[in-house]
Image (cartoon, protein in one colour):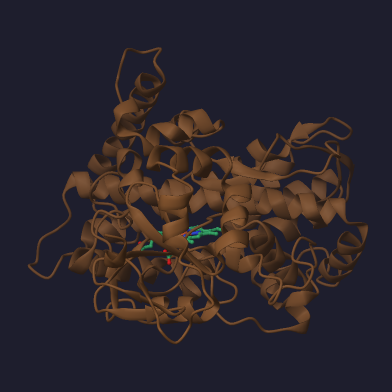
Length: 475
Ligand code: HEM
């Protein structure tokens, strides 16, 4: 049975047969592996890599080969659609939240069509027009911070990225309806993250039982129903008053037709909206929080970065942040050291292929292990150290530095997220002097489906750097 997934490659006989070790010798049943992955993902992955090397097999919802060798990743991601295809139903863990029609949960032609559509709004000049919204929303949020009064940075940054994505997707982030949607989305997400116990519900479908309004899944279902109601109201409103001057993503989706000339149904529109609203703010928010932590933890990084940002002058155009090499290096190192997503989405072998010396049969599920690639000492010397300079000294290939995955499922929001990280960080650092209140060494842990800090981080504003009137005049 083991031979079905791996066959010893005759030419390389120094590599161990990891699948044998994991499933047979260690005798770890799938549910226990899921528990490790949910409660202890970082040390579990590190232990697996230390023991088995670049390629090994785990069993979560299905048996999967995990790969952290850049050459092997190149083979996989550069050949999506040839030797590999996207796994149908491979992202089922997302379905209770995102629905059946999300770009993340569909595959084949449907996936291709939806991807093409969304890419037009999230790239190039179109994407750059969101810069103004990104800096304005950041200024609005930081104008509420009080000097010397500590606050939790996670919720503040989440509020910024959620407002920005609401503006891009729905064309508005203000008013009663938008506020209600923002609050309901945050509440809904809190029921499936903020503790690994809540995340378990996504991996074990038998926990997805509505046992009343106070049961964990019951709370999630009720919040989700409220979010759905608000999203369907947005869709209905947009369908009634078709306004051709609108440039938001919902209007684009409403106008789009598939190859048979059919428009999207309301359910399909809802799934796409919630996907963008959730994945379009949560990962970026956590990335910005990590960046603020590192910048304020390491004085050398902060000094160098402030020097660069100050060179832009007091009132800079958002797109100017794209010219700052050190800011770019800080963002890359933030995404490298604790990548927000530990894994790529799974792919499935289409044609028999040799990977790292193993023969993989058609049907084998293969997943790129982003976290382990980013921790390779042969690529990143002193990999545990936050060192932005490494990105100034060396150009990494798209298979050595892969925070956004690659190939046919490469993150649709990559350019948007990178731009937003830079605009928000530069705006915060140009407008206020912050300090960490929580000054312990913060470690990564699972936070829902992303890798977040293991505690709430408190920061304090020591000084506002621009006069209040100047500052508000820009809003
Ligand atoms: C720092 C922020 C972000 C990180 C680290 C990140 C990371 C990722 C990763 C690793 C994947 C899987 C790629 C693969 O399997 O090869 C992915 C997919 C995806 N991301 Fe992101 N992402 C971020 C922000 C965003 C934003 C802002 C949006 C939307 C505006 C977005 C939308 C998506 C979508 C729709 C997919 C699925 C693509 C598909 O299935 O074709 N992401 N992201």
